[in-house]
Each structure stands twice: as structure tokens, then as C-alpha cells.
Image (spheres, rainbow, N blue to C red):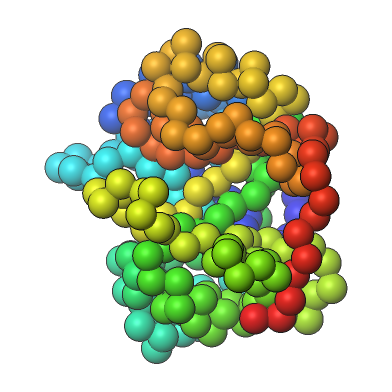
Length: 267
């Protein structure tokens, strides 16, 4: 199992009132199978592609009124220190740091613009067993109505290097972990007037698929809503969806690309 560097997305999970419905939906759309529910941890249930863990689903805690939503976790070498930076930079720690048996230490938080996310200091469980392959986590983007606050927060908390698309008509940035020359690990998009007023700031998680259009067909047949797409881009053909319980996510076929990559410049 991979050990994830500081600030790299390392895990994703979601709460669903209808856990069996969620398992049936994502099993069909993304090809997931599911392990046994862990009653010790509130029926937390891991999803697999083959024998490799790619995400988890869990029923809400008793009395919880939270709506279904995917949560992305960022790797941390020291969850307590990350929680302190979250507070110091105007964010809110909602839970933790909380040790989860010998699996690791968890923090749940929000940035100053209301973007919810998790922090994970891995121990026995480091995170995704695979990324980028069919059925697995592939990419994520922060959607916010307060981009300046969100940019300042994430770069301060995780030490990212920020770059923006070299286009005055587009407010989109990417973040790369400090000291790494590799690929960016997170995007940031500004929410404009095309987003419904009731849509909250959020992180959208992308899962890789072999055929975007076929995945959308399977999803809509099971009651999903198409928010956007399918659309061909230089990064792959993708679509933004809402599952039958309201959780937003996206599917992307990274092999089906069209157009030139955008030019980036330091932000």
C-alpha cells in the first residue's frame, strides 16, 4: 500500500442513508465490489476494484441530518499539526484529531469558504490502494465562491505551489505539493452565476472509467442526474453527476482526450 506525501489526496468516503442502494449504484456504475461492514466502526464498508481498496461508504450516525456527499481526505504526516494550521488560517476543525484504532488519525474540517474535507495520518491504512485506473479515484477540484480565501487557505495549510490557467477569461488554479516536481494533485474552480444559489462550496471527486458515455448511461438508468457533460477535454472525456441520494461526483475517461493542454503560469 502506498504511503502518501503531505497534502496528496489519499482517501474518499461518503455517508448514505440507503447503504445498500449506494452499493448497488456504484457497483454498477464503477464496477465496485464491497467488503464486510465493520460494525465496530458504524458499518463502515470499503469498496474494491479487484482486491484493491478504492473508497468507502457508511450510513449516517444516529440522529445525523447531514446529506449524502463525498469527502476527500488529504495525507498528513502529523494530523494535530495540520489541525492547528487549519485553525490558524481561518478554517474550522469539525472533528478530531481522532485516532481510529490502529488504522490512522482523522480530522474533519472546513475552509473559510465552507469547503468540507478530511485529513488522514495513515498508520495501518495509508489510503487508496490504487489511483487513476478504471474504477479508482483520479482527480479532484475545489468549487468555491470565495476563491481568494480558498487559495490562501489550502496553500498555507498544505504548502502547495499554485499555478493558474493562462487565460483571463478563466479563474482556475492547480496545486502541487511543496518540493515535488510531479503532477498537480488538486484543482480549484470559482463558482459563477451558472451554479445554483443553493449549491454549497465543495470538493468534486473524479473516478476513472473506461467509457464516459457508457458510465453516464448506467448512472442515469439507476436514477442519477447529469449536471454537466459528457464533454471532451484535453484531460479526458468527463461528466459531472449527482447520484440518486444527492452526492455529487464525476466520471472521466482519461484515455479519450481532445484539444491542447492549457498553458499554466505561477499564481
